[in-house]
Image (tube, rainbow, N blue to C red; front, side, top):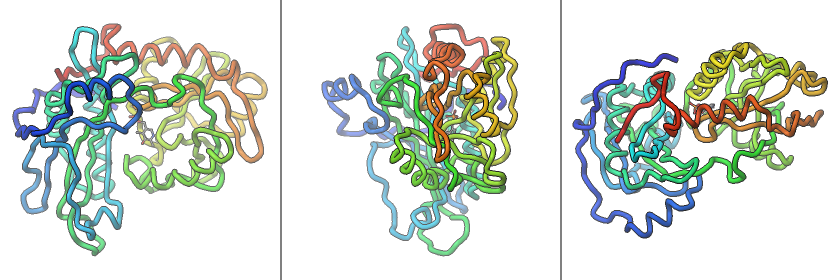
Length: 370
Ligand SMILES: *Cc1c(COP(=O)(O)O)cnc(C)c1O
């Protein structure tokens, strides 16, 4: 994942149409005091409209509110939709930053391409986020491990039941003040390894960040809950033997010898920005880091004989989350020390230190919004 040169702010291109009924200060302060994940939204949203005829136009920030959608809008029937997820972090000096947004912008364009949606220019993606966060700056929370979660998305808005790529599309970015992703905090999670379902397959949409992948993961997720596990891990659809990823997070395995492994990008795994950053940080810390297949059989054996020391998942929302238990129909294994290993904790600390501005950003990963 490459980091491109920080482009000039494009906020000027977005017309600000402020709400006439912003959330009262006292109410907002109360909402910001105890943020949960994705339940509260700011006063505004950024939008850009696309049509085959006019291309991308009408860049604006407008009051947050329901979107008008015809019952025959293509997205409601065929799921032509992609999204992104990134965060704005408030630093101690009052400045607000986001983490590697160029990677999200590039991935958003790649996801759009796979779903036959129009690509939004990197400048418009960044411009929409800058304009939204500057307009709703009062919504950036300041508590420990809190942030303003940004959710850009794009969907087929054309009123048309025929099956072809839509000729009318909406891009919208919304923002939500959030606390830690898992209500339980940074405690190890339990994982159910799914045998009967896959979230993606060869040639499918696994490498694109689209709602459809998540829709496919919900039933297995429900079954994991029913079996007492918090998250699911999917295996590859071709051989059913190698780990791919969780429903919305990439997975890493740390050996007792300090080596680190994550599944390679095989076309059905989502290339996480966190995954890429963790690979860099662990390599710099001197670990032997490999993007190589992880066979479930080997992982089970490694957990049993102690050659696997730590397992963790990572993604923007939950950052780095230790995995303490791995189970399926025919096994139930506990990770050493219940999953509170030192490599997981160290890389989580390093990453959040960079994101919250507690250490200098030597990689050029941070982009100032405010
Ligand atoms: C978004 C996502 C991830 C994590 O990506 P980040 O860029 O690190 O947030 C991993 N897997 C899936 C399926 C995802 O949708």
